[in-house]
Image (cartoon, rainbow, N blue to C red; front, side, top):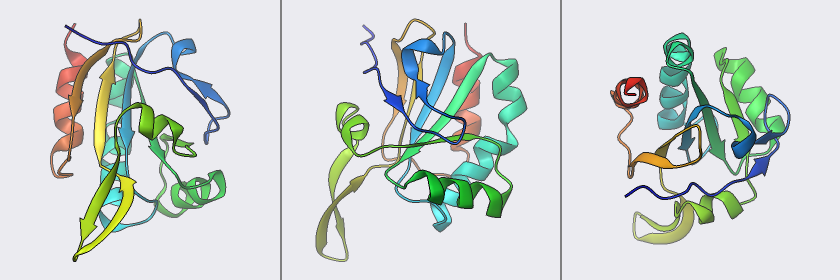
Length: 147
């Protein structure tokens, strides 16, 4: 059974975006912060495969709590051509990825690196939690290519 993806409207590097208005498959990937090593690699991998996602009629949107100025700087610095959206935390909570993290014995709240593949009619087709970056974008692309 698939569940409905929580709808949202967020500011992004491509203007305001509303999930339900996209009318196509969407890869929604949540990441902790712009310009950190793992997040940079993940964004570069999705950027590198952008044409293949487009061929699979799938939009890719990265979401973090960083503001638009940070996203734009991150995209310029690394030559990224993917859409990054800025979330105040409500969307991360709706998707269950705003979690308590434990880093070196210190607990804090943050985004758990997670990805959701959403159908054109807004159903969650697949989700990946606690993502390891290496090979992840390729795995998501394979899933996006399925009918």
